[in-house]
Length: 335
View (cartoon, rainbow, N blue to C red):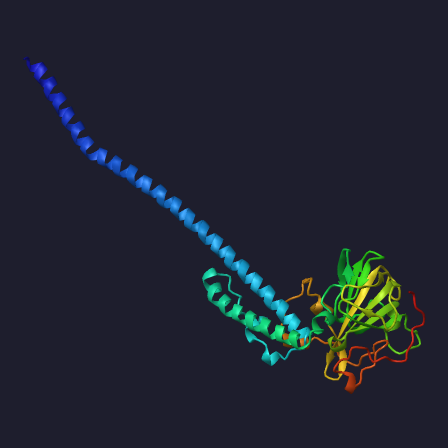
């Protein structure tokens, strides 16, 4: 073997040794990289699965929170309409307590458990009140007074500047804008105390409402329906919740079709207007959640004009099946 050939063989052997050494180092690294890459992909998939599960749990917690708050608001309003003592009501349902203000699922869970106990207690109190007076629930105003028609609240209960006189006043009801002729219904069972128009010479503001109907609900108070186009009931008639009273119009001080609606609630020895939207249990209508005490504090201040067809004395304030009738008569009726 020549010297040149020996050099070639030595060089080749060296190359093989280098390759062998390289493979010994790189192959395990490649294998390890592939194993770690596979594990990383697996961990990434598992992480995404966990994240999806967390999002579902968070959505469920927020959904339960919202449903619980809506249930608490409904029971608070029922308690107010039933005149249940605030001192006996579960305080945890008061919105100002902020029991369910948290948005984080891990904080919602323990608060939700406490709130649900309050809901159960409140439901038991309401059920006991209804068992004691089976006629209370159907008498209590509880629905929107317009049926089978689109409507929009256009004026709300509370202080305002009168668009007619420019004078500061307390608006004692709510106006619902809707199409002329829309069906107006009783919001609770009761007796029609007045149906017609009030003489302008009479004291008070009710003549401005044009054609009106007043329904007396006994211990559940009274409701007023104004600006009617047509009246379909008569004084002394018994009506049930959802029964037609007339059709919506623009009589009296109204420049477009609307229904003026008021809810007068017993307070001690008198009837006093309160926000009618507290009693629309079938629609929330954008009102914020309030406690019983907060709702009681919103009643209209005095002095008040007497309700057409109703006179309330100290002995009658507890509520009767028939309205204590005044001797003021309607100017005319449209039956």
